Image (cartoon, rainbow, N blue to C red; front, side, top):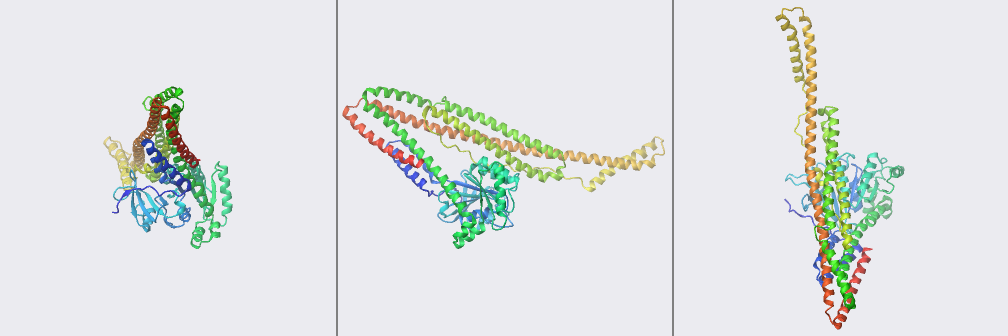
Length: 616
């Protein structure tokens, strides 16, 4: 078996903003080293790692056979996603930048693992009927997707294009997983072809995707195949406006024309294909936009570091420049230090807000999950009670899994929103004391959790065979005949023999009907119990994961603000020490130190200006 290695970070982004941000962060790291602030250097090192892979993810979603894989191939200018009229994509394919063309199988893990595969084996793993299309390998490891690295300039800024399996209807498990993926994406390309106008299901999915991810584009494919595509485009535009989705931009493309234009280097044909505008939107509006945001975040970290270092220098300079006011500066710093030290205690307001907020969110998320599972069980009971599970069980299994998937995605979306609210409250309370800014909150992708619990009910829902029905009917008939022939003769009553056979047959029919009813009730009870067992297991697994997620968020926020409090405490302590020592200096020492501080403040101001220019 090929060697498994942790998934590596993506290549460095190639946009000017990212390059400028890297340079500013490098200067900031040198400043931290020069001023002996390893704590601030750790902060910039984390920003440096984020700049190494801006990772702007564009998720391509849509129903089966709408041209998603062809669109991805045409977009990157090379065939990487399998395209076939008879098979469909079964695993997501991640297309990103690489120095050379490579392919990897991405396996679930923490961190995820990847296993190199040959490029010509992508089809084997990515399509239905392939070796890993079921999602789990013979060794038990779950296959999360296929990753393809390409030396394409449009991907160099950290752009990652994700080709997903078809939705299979809004109620399918694939659709639930796609919605979960869109909640973690930077942008969504919803693909529909020009054969017909948008369906109600597609509009509903677009609305949900818009709510989960702010940037959504609708791309209409196969314009070369359907002459009436302009009319369909106008109808789709009207649908989007009428449904309150007017901000969703609609683009029309032909992957076939784009592929031919790339092969023949035909600029006019490329424009006719519609891909010129799509590439511009993807690379400039989305790709560069994502890289720019990463650069801005890193630049803001440099600004914050410069402010902390400059703050302690300014306090020392104030005490040196005006010895008469030195004591006032020292008193102010002492109060500031006391206030900052309070941020490090468990009794601080931000810490209490974090603890209480996570407890409240945990209770609300558990209650929301229990309510959702209860509604699923009730709906399943109603459906099973209205028919025979022997007829409807295959449809019930598919419905149950897709419904559970949607409820879990909705529960995780609720968790993400509530956790974001708690994060904002904690940040506000921290800033009330320190003025420090908020770090990024990460709520991890719930998609892998949707398939963690398999539905394998051990129940028997077969109807009675014809042979068994005959035996039940004969048994009832025999009892009736015996009742109206043997017993009357023992009592000396005669004349009932002619009616014994019809009555026996009626009793046999009634007995058969009662047995069928009893077995139907038994099958319904078995099916309902199977649904409850599955839902109980789902609630157990997902409840545990929700609690783990919230604890991870709590630790993330706690560690972030604890680190910021330690930085502020160290900066204030050093400023207080320098201000206290300044009182003991001679006038000549003060003058020399003021010049040194002015020089250092000028350097920090210059670095801050560069960072502010990058951060906008």
